[in-house]
Amino acid sequence: MRSTPHRPPRAEDYTIIDVRTPGEYSSGHLPGAHNIPLDQLSTALPTLRDAAARGDLLLVCASGARSGRACATLAERGVATATLVGGTQAWSQHGYEVQRSEDSRATWGMERQVRLTAGALILTGLLLAPLVHPAFQLLSAAVAGGLVFSALTNTCGMAAVLAKLPHNRARTCDLDSTLGTLNR
Image (cartoon, rainbow, N blue to C red; front, side, top):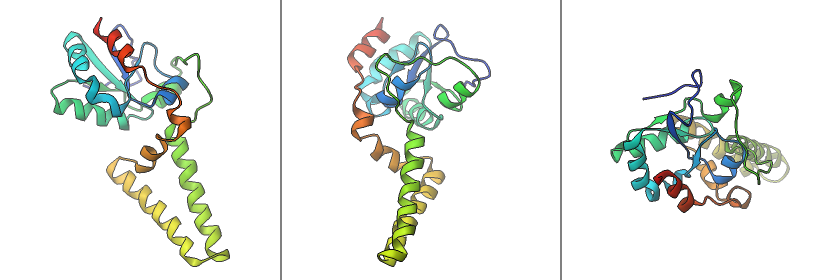
């Protein structure tokens, strides 16, 4: 089952799970969404299985890539889910409301952070190659190769690394509280 932002999902119709980092979640999420970061899905599996038995689960991320991976992971474990095609980006572009956490800071989305980092590394390699040493061109080539690999596999190693930085990990996900809410 897949959902599109053309017919907005409502918290009454789905149990909405946002699989982004806590920082991304607090910067804007679907109304009624619960934050269970992608790297904590296995811990939440029993609760998600119970929630799926009570109704439809809708997984959400920024673009739909991470929630798509989460859907595949849960499907392998016998949990039926749907993903919001286009994620919160498409949701916002269609003019639907997003909620922000009280402690919301101006956190850039992961895709924007990846674009900045990749661009900065490529530019650094290109600028330093003629000034310092031609081997700096390898930095640009490595990042370009990583971007191609990322597009082909729909994964992003740079996003995984950036997610571990302090500004992305500063907010914590109270997984126990979230799971307790889902168990009600």
